[in-house]
Structure formats: structure tokens, C-alpha cells
Image (cartoon, rainbow, N blue to C red; front, side, top):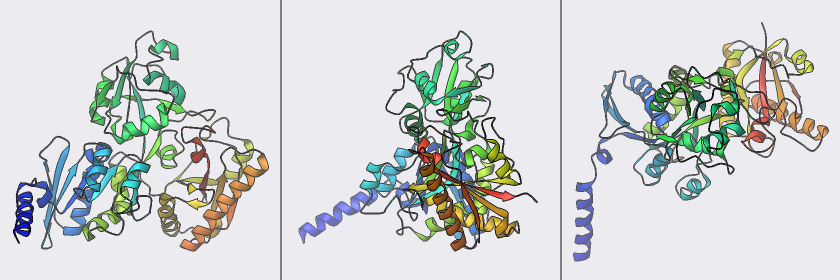
Length: 440
């Protein structure tokens, strides 16, 4: 009995000393500042107002980069806390039970997946939820004449190996580096896609917790170069980015939504799979819905709602491809694959329904759609052609099963790459299926 009493006393004391946030909120979202600064609160506000029928109030949290959103209505009172201190902090909060949702501007690392394996499979569609597409924006001062930069040169710049703009065709002026901090998923993405194993960030770089503050400081410094999420370009100027022999692209609606832009990235919400409170599941569904994705667009990020667009052909696009697509417009959705050559990834599985809904809404028939598959670099042209056709066939079957009887598909081999054949995730981006809809 004394031992039991001592245990109860410890539990009571622990409960009394827990911070207020652990007892006061109906849902907590921790992690990425890229998501938490504006997108997360906008999605929460839309969800709460839809659910309660009331208006949402917002107040500052107990620390910087924290918000508390509250709504009252329909006999319901809901309070949600957003703590936006960086993607890695969100994982720790989800793992130790302080957060219901982990907001991340990068995919979960293998070490994080392993650490959560007993609780949830972070690789599964029940746990991994893509809520928006973002592009890492490479920013310079408006007076800088440079228009484009390669990923390799970008790595050398941020490693301090290129330290004057004159080496890139710009003015004779020292380069000043602006980077996100180590807790940031934006930094993790930049480190993975740009620095890789070849480069290390120069110690002279200024580091920031906030995307917006970094962008504002770049806009004030003629020697500056920095990177942020696409929603934080503000008064700075964007550079086009090239990967290998692929054309340089600026981030825009089509290049980012399709993930053709070399520094495109997905923004994630991670949950505990099937072990979520009902409120969490309802919020995730709202964020994925057309209404939630409309809010994504309003926030400055790229929505996953499909849009038909006229392609901006680069001079390198073959004449045969121009003829193939001359009567079509391209949808802002690419299907990509998680492993092997035909297994759709989690985003692609969600996109199936988005395509079906789009075709129904636009009154499109089976003959209005053309799927074009592409392969990453292969040992020979025939092998690449077979792989590209296999991918297009895989998507056509999945769309038919989802309710869209798509019939027309073809493969275009390993031509028209959007990334380098090795590194910088180029191979994964090259292996894709584009969706084209016939012009009316």
C-alpha cells in the first residue's frame, strides 16, 4: 500500500506541475514555421468556422511563433494551439504525446519513422498527409541582374566557395548568405536538395527562424542571397533554378504544382495513423478537401486542386511532343511513384480522387484525357520507353478503378527530363505521369 500511495502522489504532483498547454487545448499542432506562420492558422480557422458555425478568434501564445485559435458555436467550444518552432520540434512533440499533429516542411526521416514504428507507420497514407506544394524560393535583392542559377552553383555559393557576384556574371560585390535555422524543415530541404554531401553551409551565413524576416532582410541587402518558402517572397526577387541539363525554371503555379521545379517540396501533416481523436481526423480531411485547398492557394502556397493550364514550352521541347499535345492543356498534377516503377505514392493516391472530381465537374469524358508517362535515365531507349508506358498504364488503371474511364495513354521515354539523372532527387522527379485534357 505505501508503494501504491507513493506512486499516486507522484502522478498527482506531475499533473499539478504540467504546463497549462497540456491540459487546455482540444488539438495541438507543432512543427514547421513555414506551415505554422500563416497556412496552418488559416486552415484551422476555416475548419473551426465550418464545424462550429461561429467566428474564430486568435491570440498570441506564451512564446514567439505560437498562436491559439478558438471558436464557439453549435454548443461547441474548441481551442487549438499552433507552435511553429521548426519541423524537427514537431516530430518530438508528436512522439512524446504533446502534439496531435506534426507539421513538417520535409518528409519524415528514416530515424523518425523508426522511432514511431510502435505507434504509427509514418510512411502510410493514414499518417502522412500532403497539404500543399511549396517551392524553395531563391531570393536576391531587386537590383541584382542575375536571372538564373544552377543547383551546383547555388551549393558553391552557400558553401562560401563562390563569394562574389562577379563569378556568376553579376556585379563586383561580396555575396551575403541568408539561411533558415537548424530546426527548420526549410533548411533540411535546402540541405538535402542543394548542399547534399558535397557542400557545408558557410559559417558566415545569417540564420533565421522566420521565413518572412529572412526575406525582408534579403530585400534590404544588395549583396544578399537567401532561401524561403514560396509564400514568403514578399519584396525580394526570385531566381530561376536549373538542375543538370534540364531547363532553368522559376517557381510558379504549374512548375511547383507539378513538382517539375527543381526545388519544389511537399508540405506535410503527420498523425498517429488510426489512433487519432475524431477532431484530428476531421481537420485532416478538411485540409485535403477542395475548400481546404482553396485556403492553401489564398495563403500563397500551391493548391492541389487541379487546374488546366497552357504549357510554357521551352525551346528544347521536341517538335513531336508539341504535336502530341497541341490539342490539349496540361493539368497541374503529376503522378509520381513511391518505389519501383508503378506504385503510386501517398499524394498520388489522393490525387486520383481529385482528378475524378475535376473530370466530373468539368463534364469531361474518357476521350478528353491523355496520360503521358516519362522514365528516369535508363541504359537504353527501348527500356526507357517501356518503363514510361508502364507508368502511364498504371495510372490509367488506377483512374479507372477510381471512377474515371481514361483510355488514352502513351510513354515518352527518358526524354524531356526535369532534373539531373543523379542526385538532387532528379531521378524521382523525372519518373512521372503528366495529365493532359483536350481543349474545348
